[in-house]
Image (cartoon, rainbow over all chains, first blue to last red; front, side, top):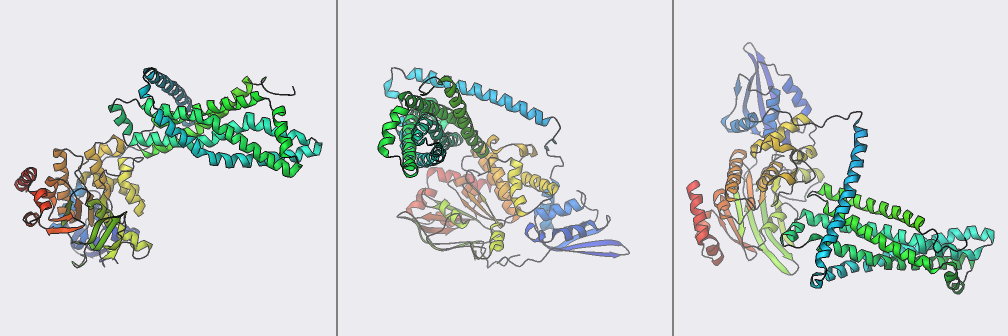
Length: 376
Length: 261
């Protein structure tokens, strides 16, 4: 229940001596916005030479005063009666500087082109900054050589648990389902040719060499990469990183290296785990669809997939982990102390790390094209 | 004018517990229109908690909080919103929206309120900025580019944007140097005088307390130990009050405030 306040009102009287306007009621923000258009129209219809009386205004806040001030054309009318209690409000309104705030320049024809150029330059800056980050990490690591007491072993261990062990359930779930789906789709095609047993080759090669590492990387980039960026970003916002610097502790050694090392170590293991579960899923599906026994599947797998593929898959996992962690830390350290920058950098971090993973995967595919592929 | 019987803030039998520790036990407090009430107490005595309960950020375990005679959550959506617009809060660290410029920060409540006339919003923002003695040039800056004192001023301007009747200040002078803090206190005092605000503030700073408060409420052991004008509070025989108001530093602060009044 709000207190009953008299509504703002305006009365205009015209006689031989001229027009007289008297205002009454609450001229406050809360009361005025109820029907602003009508009152504003009435204000504008008052003749220029009118005499104003505010004697019966019960309350006036700066919004009400501003509305009147604008109706008067930013100056006091010649004949104005203001009760002394309301005088300070007008004095404040009169003090408003008349100047224009900087406005956004309008969109011009060439702005789109300029934007493209800006993006290219920005990508260049990112590449330089990324190389600088790697260089800084190496310099700081060089300082740690031979000083094994300062190695961030506990941080690495904690990060390993966070990005590796805690990621196992989701990796298993996604891997299993992908395995089932791949196996199911391939089985439909293979049965048409009577080539049932080749499901082992398709699943084995596809998952171990290609799908396992990429799938796990995408999951980890979304799960752990974003978390790393956000964590470093918030530490930046709350000045924790500055506090570390003041204590003479390198942010790279204490914050970046543990994340990078942990993810580089955890990713091959996660890849192995994810691929194993995916193959298990494929095996279950093949058993149901094609009546292929588990025994046959497991015996055929080593023959169909040379062990070099497993090595490639695990090496890819390690490289992807390294890249995801470096990209995540790079963007995390770039966060400026505001929320917009935090969200923008986290988004860019995930997008950039997934893109980098796919590009590097393509490079791997070309570089290893003569290794580990049977039937050529 | 609103009838004097409706109190801006009224706490009745408020009890709060965090986990197993009771912060407040059966606490009563009333703030009447036009006064400046300072809440003081040792650290951990729940001053800020009490302030947050007043604005509905925290719920007391027992008891009720009334603002302008009504429980904060009473009524339909519109009356709840209208009630929320009758008070403004200044957070300890400003709580400015870091992604928005100073101008957009102060204009934010106005736009949310439904004002669409950009020229009017511009004038109102400049008016609020002039009220808290900020230069118009600051309007285009981001909160991260402001000094501590300026952040507080912008936050105060934002709290005042919708012409509130009640202003809640959480440590208004914390983190300001003595000179700036004295300036900020003068600012709040002149705004209180000219706008007729009711002010509730939480502070550790005796200079602020002595310069601003018309009434002091001492919070200790989960209840209001004593409430009244500063001179009256100082005569209360209690170990906490003795420590708080009668140390060497406190006497000097109170003497300074006495001179400047």
